[in-house]
Length: 405
Ligand code: AMP
Ligand code: MG
Image (cartoon, rainbow, N blue to C red; front, top):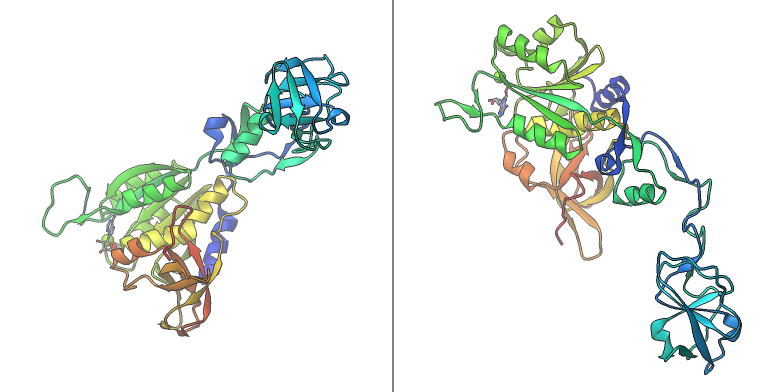
């Protein structure tokens, strides 16, 4: 019995394991998911320091027009225990510790500089241009939670706390197997009736986009020995994705071979369009996704089912793309019974609203529509009509998606 889109996704997310962790250098950790909470052990900034190149002063001395001698110099990286005595100033550079006695910094450009002296030209307030110890982060603050992907900002924070290595989840190693007698590799000479294997490169790109590691197994032919050999290899990886050979045709043998290897199939067929014959199972701890062969179906089912699973395996706590409400600029019709994974064009109008329309012909054979799409709308299985002006939920393909005006 085909199951619903949402049941299928939940069953997958419940079944897939979270991978182990390892220590990685900051560079190696970037883009991966931290496996521990980070609690601040000390303050940031670690000491009061100057936010500007200028003069460390005592506010009580800073009446406008007053001339004050410069008695010291503090470049960044140097500390001085020499206090700023009443009636004097110390030249200080950005990042240098505020010397004892000083309670403000006057930027170079805000005073008149003379030979070994400055003249006060503006009102000075206590704390001006000082970065106080702990104003950013205090000891005990939880600054990063486990399950967070490490972006450049988190890497900056980790480096500030002298974490040269951090525990992160392993990258998922994903075996990718194309199946079909008609397939030839992209760099092989064309034969009549041949179809280029575009699924292996497209799936590998999709796997890599989320920081997982593709292992391309090549093509298995539609016979038992060939499938057995390749599937055996694929089951060594953390995840196996096959494409094609999963419908009900005479040569659709993928599920049969997986069953021979002892895979427990959790479902076959989802009430969706495209992607109906998708199957999913577990071989011990290895999730196996059997995706349909049509290149559009392959990528859409990867997007909706495999991508969240790989993210969970790599330790991500949020695995689904953010949903946005968008206004339909045209009516949409569909047959009731299956959820439609609609390839959509998205624009932002002059009022800043997100506007959605079909990205083109939604026939599964039309790859062009996927190329033209910026995202996906999931049209509920039971509905058959959506009116222009109605708000529907959409998700974008990724951070690099740009929206036109
Ligand atoms: P199947 O599920 O085996 O009936 O395949 C469905 C359709 O997808 C057929 O037209 C195949 O030729 C095509 N197809 C299958 N595998 C690939 C692939 N790796 N790259 C491109 N097209 C494929
Ligand atoms: Mg086939």
